Length: 454
Image (cartoon, rainbow, N blue to C red; front, top):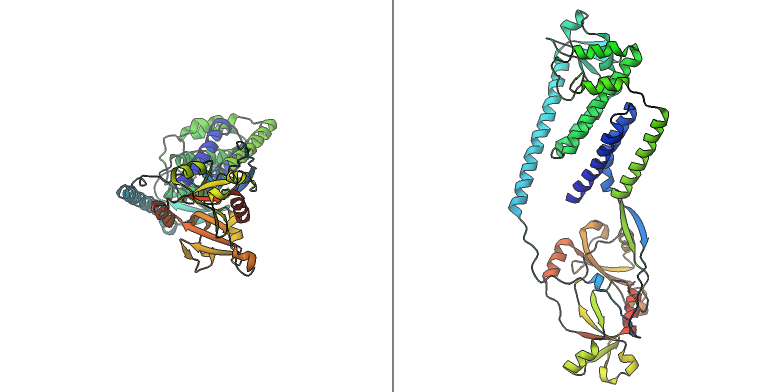
């Protein structure tokens, strides 16, 4: 979850930074509305994507002399000698409790605002007004809009004191469904109240709604100076309830300047192109994952799927220190090290047991493993009792796949043995002691086994 929050915030920060530096002062309100909505939805969804990009990794191997070196150290990291750092359950529970309480408060505030508007709609008289429903309120105050409702002072409306430009402004909010944008953002704020970028986005979105409504007024009356004077006369009027689109004047200077700006077609084209490039970059940064393609195993390089740390050149030192040792040269077949020829001794390696590496299977591997007739599967050291798809791919913290030698003589048996460890079981596995016995193995047999396991 923490990774998702960081990636989503990073995506939204880049999008809003581009808006602030490039788009905010341009007179393209419809385009900016689409951009802000796309920024909100993109930052929420892009970190959830997993578009895999394959990068062919070619690793040159230069073994010394004639002795091949098989390394699986990447699959067998050193087991930590100390226990994992202690967690802080009390702090985590406290943070979770604080988040839950604050989320409930924001949900309560959001619900209260909705109920207040619903109560006004149900209590006061209504009249059809063009494409909206007029709600006549007692007292004085600025008109404001919510969904298809337009709230105005009954006294001012019946006396004809509500200017036509003001009503046109609010009708633009209704016809362009600006309330839906605000409702979407408010719902997200109920769970993401801690993210300051969402408040920045909300202010930018509300200001752009005013630009859009101003644009509708000026296209209807074609008298910008008169409309600007009207805005200045109403600067001291009180604000309206939350969740509504209303004639607010906290950014009157920006609105007045925006009415006099002109954006050329060339600038519009440039803005569209740069925005497309930005979203392509965001998809590349936050919507893709790198998939390493391991080269096929050869005599000098094996796929890192074997849970052993294999090192060459140590057999002679062990023989000198501990005496003659048996060498595994085939299934169940061992020979004394002293009986091997000098050429064969160069192919003898020391094998140390190690824990399987921490890694989650790729979607391709997970799909292949669903063919249970091909795999004998163990989960957490126990034979699989349920279908593999009863687990999530991300539940698996480590896995090991070995070729089943019995399949050669008995084709009806599974071809591979597949061992999977869930996160909790893998944590326990890392705490278990390893067998410190050293085994000498004849290299060609190791290469064959690893090649079959691949």
